[in-house]
Length: 251
Image (cartoon, rainbow, N blue to C red):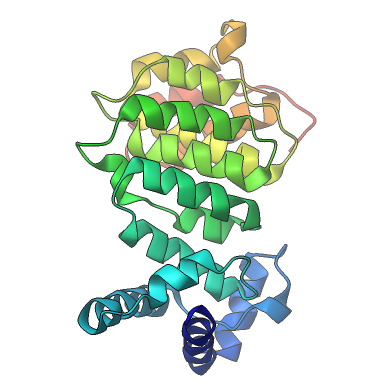
């Protein structure tokens, strides 16, 4: 059944292929081989994910479950679909942990990573402390996109009260990586934190920031750049942020 279901999904994805969009998408995600891309727009993939879930529900089948267990996938769009289905199907944080621990080692690009947006982590029933412990573990994994996902999750689900805690800033500041995709999400996190938790976050950018909150030069400056591009931060605060930029030879 798993093979049949997977073949049906692959066939449908090939039917949605768009060569012109494939070229556009390949340029945006340069570290993914174009040979693994079909060129399917995100709204089409989201619609197909919902269609698969409805079909399973109406027919009593398990195509989605079988597809989610069939790792690794071959196509970029299969991984995108996997992320979307995972978002919609998990019902608890523990189930999400299990499924993400299986899937994250196969994520090899920012697009699939950032498509992960698990509803179960935002449920009132979710143990936020357990989620934070898992985020801590993921940030120490050494894997680019596992770390990126952990910071992205922290940004999406833990910057609003009552879940926010200033110690979370230390976790992001403490990540040490030369990888662009890790440090870019760290910068996005800091910029978003400035919009939502200014008083706690601005300390990270002070010249005398404590060691546990001090960012490397690239992430520091990129955080300021992204914050200055945000519509959620006032012009006065943006002017102040620009005065905190470090002189650095690294761009």
